[in-house]
Length: 476
Image (cartoon, rainbow, N blue to C red; front, side, top):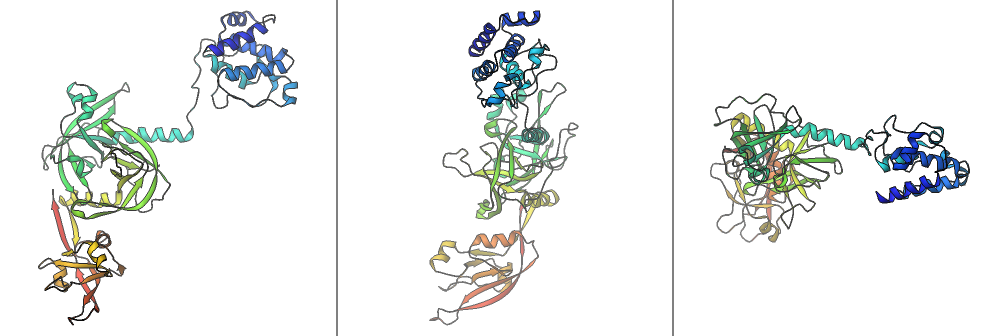
């Protein structure tokens, strides 16, 4: 840099009369790193302390650094004995690259390091990395290297890059992300599939030379659950029943944690392919837990994770990881007014995902507990100032009708559900929250308030009912 060169020239001119070894004189004439270091060492040793201090400060300032001025007793003792370093954290100088004469050896190694870093190479050897990775950065980069083999991209058509076209065109064909669940299957969001039954799955791995290698395989959808926005794909298969042998080492299943004990503030890492940019990583924290998000059919997804880790189109279906490298959720949605990330990302908790994926793998569908009740809109119950949610209809022969639940009839209000399993319910979300924790066939206690039989009475009778939950299935 011109400023550094002028500074080193100035130092060299002030020390031209000093006896130096031949290699240092040659270096000084060239204003190479060794000559500048020798000149600075001579200045620090022979300018009566303050001159060397000024030269030291000047070279720092030329390099864009702002060191702390030395104390008077340090200057009086010569800048060569000054404590502290203006180049702290820049890393060690390559061994054998610094002059070994008496003048330079008296200079603090921090000053030698500064000059070597500022002027480039010393003694023909490359300087080590100017800034070493911090412990935190090493952990994040190690996490990226560990997780990316298990993250895939999902597309409706074979990526053009696999056909020899540009990577830009390949990116435009991607619809989302996914991650390896086991030796055969990949999990993603249901909405990523966009109606296709045979998406293509692309893996990005490293070859023996360390270069990216893409492997695109057929897959088939073996099960979906729109209510929780989950889909399971079998990789290398043309049909649900049959598959093809996969390349060895291609399927790298990711470890899974539990989402039951997540804390606001803990670090999370979102993996995926935002806007088709393969194998991207964004970092953030958990901003909230126990959020709710509407799934298919209006059924809410409970326990949703809120994060400020950047999630954009293309990230959907990718894993949200904790610092231990374990999946805690699936990146699913963002809250935004522009269509791009605005600081609020949502991920389905892995506990919900695991429960439904295992059901799909075992049966091909997800069995959900149902009551056989159609509730009135929450706003209607609020307008009528009811203590719970009102029953509009009951499914003939369903669990509710069997248990004696009454719906609206003949202009009279139906039963008002006020509690389930001893828990107060005030909205349909509360009811679905209870059902998510129960399995078909379980028995639940329900408390309803029933309008009095007297036509002119505004009183409600409280009735305790026992229901055996039914099952609803959604085949693949």
